[in-house]
Image (cartoon, rainbow, N blue to C red):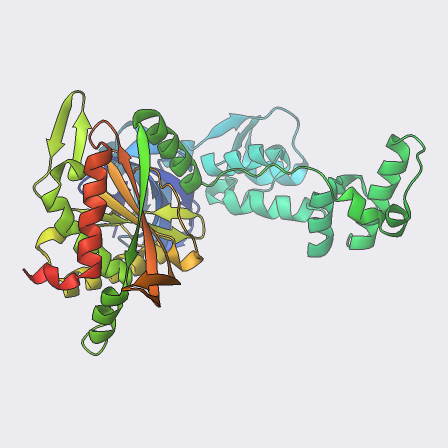
Length: 452
């Protein structure tokens, strides 16, 4: 059955998405439920499944393009099915017939085997995605044999051509070449390039470029170790770029101060341990509940600022930072102030699981009114977290340390933890911030107050 695939709307707040990767090329068969393409929204990358089985007849949105939700991105239909009506429905992006997909003029004369399938007169038929890959790889597509419909050059043809012309090199040699900045194309060798070939090329380049110099015994013994020193440029991931942008914006918007206070977690630990036979609860779960209660008592810490106006919220949506391999996500637990500890624990556990599986939607990451970030498990004593805009405060949770303290004239060991509250001074001054921390301390040291 034919269908038009569109940019999905993955949440109420999503308005557009970036198509970052097609898993299928034009002309390839597609099964219903199979991963068809990937969409990036803010910090998330989502895999989108095909709605129907058939052939990917037309790609309407190229990799890297950002379009509005529900805009057509591709067409799935039978191999010989007429898709002219679907192209009309899809709009201007698909208005041309499939037979006219990306026909480009030949810039140089093509080889005979390529012209048999891909050329029509002095023109070459190539899909947009294949042409993009060829240009990025510096490949002259005039010399590629097309295997797509009517001899059209498709993605797999370009990838196969690039693979056939690729320099054969061992993984260790490739890594070493990158570290030593050695151009593998300059190594003339029949067969696979190995690590020793890279070392020899690096030494030869060093001898030819550098003036004679006196070397230490260490340099003579291990020349490759000296050559490794240098710089390496690494592009930011999409997630890291978003984090960098948001953190820079937050620092420029909010005049902040960080306040620290130490708390005794003895009673909090007793409560946590007493619940383990009912359900497993963490310190973070307990703090979400405690802070949600405190925010109801201190509304300026749960507001946002628009111009010269405080927008006070009568609800608490708690964002909790979750560390992933590529950076941080802050999923949001909605309406924490009216939910019980068991429900908060279950929802937070589910959010963390889906965050690690890259299954969060845009709605899971929006609407927060306050954020908690916990670095205690990493042994951090104290830190100054950056506010997650448009919020006005964020609470940093530090490690719990067994610490000797004086109590009634006796030295006793207590599990102490420091809290770090970073606050926007436009809304929260020092005295107000201190009162917030004092109230959190009361609940941490006497969690039974939560039931009053």
